Image (cartoon, rainbow, N blue to C red; front, side):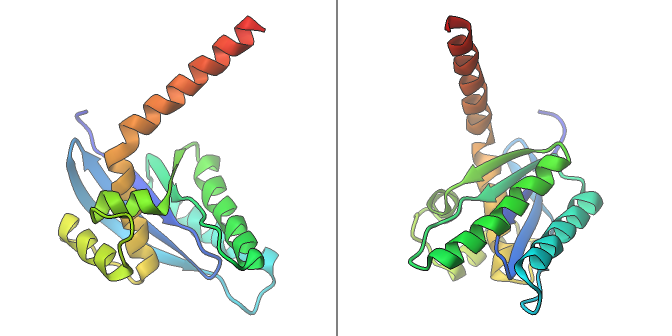
Length: 179
């Protein structure tokens, strides 16, 4: 690998969707940008999803990532909140895909374990480790810090994710050929 890969990490949320962009060149990671896309609680759900869509579209248009990574949704006790988070996550998956980017998904515990060393890290530990791993990082929210952590996780696991995708495609092709 002799050219940097720009990785967009996305931490989906209906109120605030964090995004963080890093460059990976081999094992070297560099901070590029980070921020938060927000939606207005005064708007109805459909309008809020449009706000997230448009905000992520702008991020991708201005930052030109090569790949994207999105955090998997956790299920909580409030089914309504989980459903709304899932809809925001759908936007986070859709927008990069519309731009032709490969999109990987990572469980929150894997992101924390990759960045902090334990799968049950707290927000302040994530922020601290992101600053250590990306000393020039500037972020405006915990959501943006989490998005940078997701991008770092993808940088460390992207080869394995790519291999899994290729193997799944080969298995699917073999299954179709056997039928």
